Image (tube, helix red, strand yellow):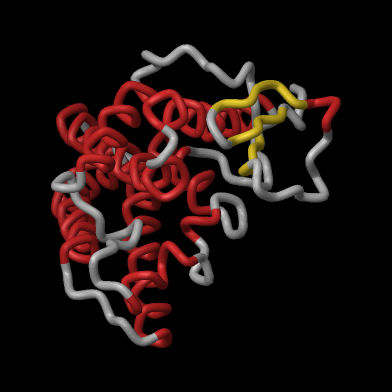
Amino acid sequence: MSDHLTHESKARVAVFLPNALAKALSSYHGFMEGEIPTDSKGFAAYHSAAKVAIAHVELLIPLRCVPKEESDAAQFYKELEIDVLARTLWGEARSEGVQGMEAVACVVLNRVEVARKMAGYWWGNNTIQVCQKAYQFSCWNKSDPQYRRVISDPQYRRVISVTEKDVYFATCMRVARRALWALIDDPTNGATHYHGDYVNPVWADINKKTKIIGRHIFYKLVEV
């Protein structure tokens, strides 16, 4: 998009972008730190609004056009990627140890790589889209117990409200950073899917199983 902007348009965007990104990021963090409704209707609206805040930042990123602002925008977006990936790891694999967290992170990144090679794929094209694609990583589904537990038991935090005061989430943040900095060797052998050993989904193809790590069974179902 920015390649087709006129010089005048770029000048306007340069003024607009930093403030817009700051507001979008502030909105996102506001949802992370604000009071969370405990009734089902209020929570559904809260969850949808949080996803809109993330989408707002994603829409602004292509407008980057001035080196300083571009650098700042890229840093903001990287922070969002790390945050969303870490929350996914916490929701999906916090009881699986560091290797289990790394394995789930690699599944996310493998999906992003598939999308890149295929010039787009139904499960999303970047880390945030892949993590939050409906009915893929269950911790982001509104119907998942991870979201509902706080209503019946305030000792548990939902995936969207957990902070680094939680030792597991702090570990997930470290794993997410290393994963997005390409500092993790993929222990899943290129897996694009996984499930817990306590379920048997219809899509699980034993011939495409790549690894068992902890209680998760991994599969490479998409070849590119």
